[in-house]
Image 1 (cartoon, rainbow, N blue to C red):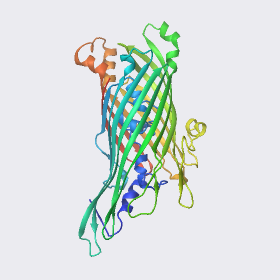
Image 2 (cartoon, helix red, strand yellow):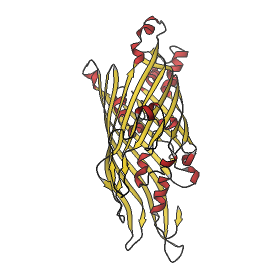
Image 3 (cartoon, rainbow, N blue to C red):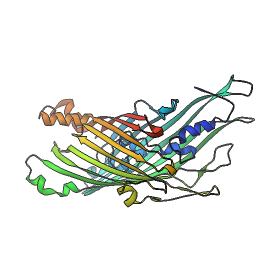
Image 4 (tube, one colour):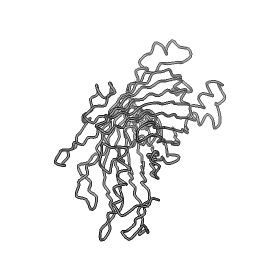
Length: 420
């Protein structure tokens, strides 16, 4: 709990948020924080790489369509909440959890291609803390208020697989923000409630499956993997703006676009009817842009599509530029689907806010461990609970860590349970 003199404490609440987004002087900048605990380990990469984590759906809802092609349910939650901006030694926390469910109806209808549908729910909370209000008569408390922001998201997705894999998805978001008390007679809460939506798509071309000569001649069943993935998402769509009580300023929704690509190469093996990634390496690049143009007279205009993102310069070239386009770069090493090691970076030009930090992370997967044991000791998981876990259940732990800049020391931990 923080004691505060007689000022509009809303200023502090907003400042805590925009410290992480100094180029965006709007309260709803918390909607731009990347919540995906796996993607945050390699430069906030969550749009152009497939992820089974339900929290990643909040970044690119197309992930839900991908998920439903091969899985039926997953639940993920931070464990524990993230201390946001820990270098400032405040009591601000960031938390996220999500659920996803899907089914491949192509199997049920005996279609010549896979067709799936999914539904999900996620919630993201930024808790700015509880503040003590003091009056002009001295430091004695005259009241308290709790400042926080959250978004509750309902997601739907469609997946299609016919040579290539395609995931489409939509998030429908209910956003609530209360940033303090505005003094007056009477005092009023500075709060806003509004709805917005996201759209996302992810497309993967499995070029490795087209290379048949190796798999046909290999008695071990080893096959090459070459997966090229493209992703795009646009978040916080809507024509309305947001106005807080006591203010005449119209706040635009933080419409946000991300585009990217990734390439995964490695070797796989068929294990009891499923493909097992023995060793793979993925390199990924994404670019993001705030799709709001501000004018000197205080007005603004929304952009559509990729905004100022250039696929050649910002995605393939991995460069941030003066148009407000930021760069995300990362890599992941997968060892037998058991251990994933990640590293990456986020880059922004100084005139745009100068958010520059490196990231690192890892994941541990129970299903991959069981497959590894089966490979090293054939028959050891051929019956009972271990074979059921191998074929239908995964428990994963994800960790991500930021180094450098105002976000230095921020870490994310999440536990995920998935059923296939």
